[in-house]
Image (cartoon, rainbow, N blue to C red):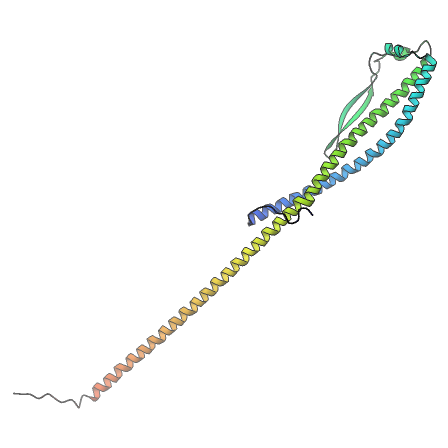
Length: 262
């Protein structure tokens, strides 16, 4: 994966570890939502594709029927019916309006046709001859326009969905292959650094504890040796005093008085 071995340049602290975990949770949630959005758009995309295929098949039949109806109208009313039709048409009877449909957060344009009654006086078109064929030709072309509007709506939605699916899939791939692995590598790096710092602190505490124990033992040995020396000194001192007293007692009878010279 492209995100393996990469990580963010952060300071390995407990606070930053919490921040990275929160970002990873957000990235995971966003990846799940975008994946669901991509699936929903893909389902809608396939449905529109089926409808486009069906509309194109219908379009072929409708345009063929319209062309035959136009030929029949020209045969019945004559070749020069264009100016007659234009004289009777004041405004379009079939109009198109646009709206938007929201599908998983994507706004798809929709085109709808509608008919305004009383906008034309084409009921009298072809009154002289070929009126029925002209009306049939008009109905055939209205059906063709309806199919064209539906096909235009489907094609526009198809292109919009295609771009939305591509953008969503790029985001899903970026989260899955770049963002999430980078955050996971960063979290592993911070955990490793924190574990190393914890081991260093534990080793430092053990060294300090060992030093204190050795210092305590040395002080105890020093105090013990000092006590032994003091005891020996006291014993020697007491022994020296006793010998001096015994010597004085023994030497009391042997002393001679000094001669007195008159």
